[in-house]
Structures are given as C-alpha cells and as structure tokens.
Length: 115
Image 1 (cartoon, rainbow, N blue to C red):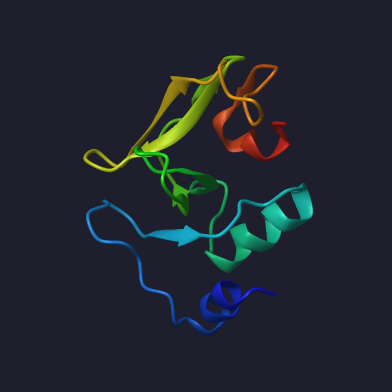
Image 2: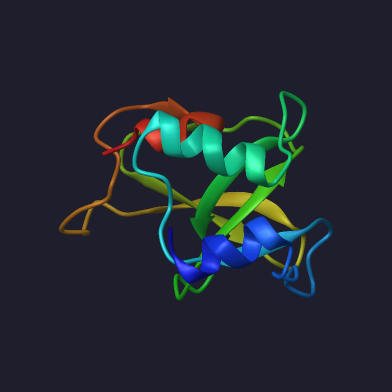
C-alpha cells in the first residue's frame, strides 16, 4: 500500500480547496474493479455518490472523489476531467494520445473499465 493510501486509511489526507465536495489527489487511478471498489469504500462513496478518478482540468494531477452529479455518456475518443470552477465533469478529445484514450463508449461511473 502506498504512503498516500496509508494516510487516507488513517484519515490524514485533507481535501483540496476550491471544490464543492471533497476531492483528493491520488498517484494512480484504480486499474480494475476490485481496486475501484476498495477506493470507493475508502471514500465512503455509494450509489448516489459514485466514485470517480479523473485528471484535473490542466491534466497535471489525478483526482478522486465521490460524484453526485449526473451520469455522463462518454463517447469513444473523449477523456473526462474535473472542472474545478464548477466542480463538474467535462470531457475533451484525446484521439491524439498514444495511450489512455477510450476506444469505445462508456458511462462516467464506468471509467475504470476503459483502456
């Protein structure tokens, strides 16, 4: 377990300022459903507040949080990010990425299945 996740388990991490709900930085997003469920549980996310892990709007760090906003249908070739000013999810074209751009459509809460 990383130092970051140990801190989170002990309750040492503080949410970032400027968001409408608690948002935390993370080193990596979950790579499979088991990790996704573990992180979701650690943040106390649920059906109403789905766990999300996406980059910030500048694509400079990864963020994780429980998101109560509407589900977004993401289209092939679009990547999500969290827009700080309004604390909402948005998407941008990522076809030019060498990896990490979705090759099929998915729902925002299913981002963990994207390759």
